[in-house]
Image 1 (cartoon, one colour):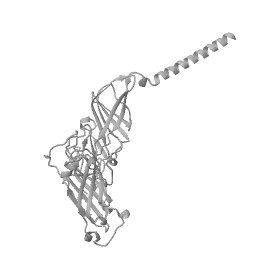
Image 2 (image 1 turned 180 degrees about the horizontal axis):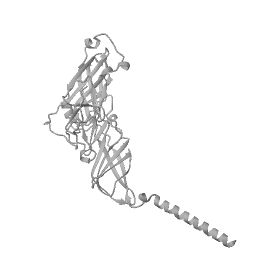
Image 3 (image 1 turned 30 degrees about the vertical axis):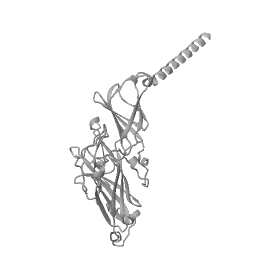
Image 4 (image 1 turned 90 degrees about the horizontal axis):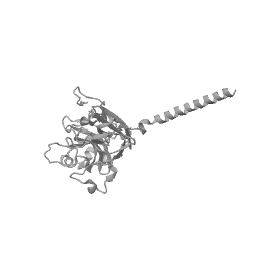
Length: 355
């Protein structure tokens, strides 16, 4: 009896030791990558919330008190998420998607290129991300049947969503016991133009207003913020104000512009044009066109564009004597139509549609 009891106790003791040993091994191995020697890079993000760059005009100083918005009202909000592209020295690409405050970036040991941009956009189309030097952003095409072309051959597009970016040409990731902090400031790649259409008379006849800004950059490069050489026309809606109409229009800025924040001479022969299309209370349309080259050249990355002296005569505003319901009829058959997301030609160029 004693012998049996002794063997039983020994068996229970051995089983218990085996259980404890197994549990300990599992606990020790559970976070081995985190607590052992490995690559652990934690991104901590900061957002530069600028809506324009001061070149010829310092709008923070020149701001008018009676304007609808305060200067700081136009500052963009931080994005909701970050995408990190890691380009390794052996030609691989690794992608991480993180919350807006940052987090753990997946990468192997070694020296890499790092590209950062926000991943919460709706209209942005990314291209060429297989390599950092070819990674670009553009925006989706849109058509407007009533639009009279301002610049021949330019694609008509939606405003781009707010886009931020950052780039590190070389980052060396090493195996460490504790996480390595990687602070990164994401800077704007999209800027805002506040456009004011100031009427001299007849604004009371305007029921709806929308516009187009021609000559804007079609693409921006994510690694250094320079814009591509092709131009596009950005279509947008306006709000009605007591002085006329207003719009906050986002764009990549002007084409073929360097990434650094410096000016350049007036040798660039590009033109920039603006229009305003209104539907009057009698249901009829009127379009205004403006050359805003001088204004845009002085503010290639966001700013304030003002056109004044617009007029609608009583004859135009009262012609026909009819009226229409803005809420019911709106722009009617002349609504903007988004183009399919991936309309590209065989050589990779974005296709242009005329409807």
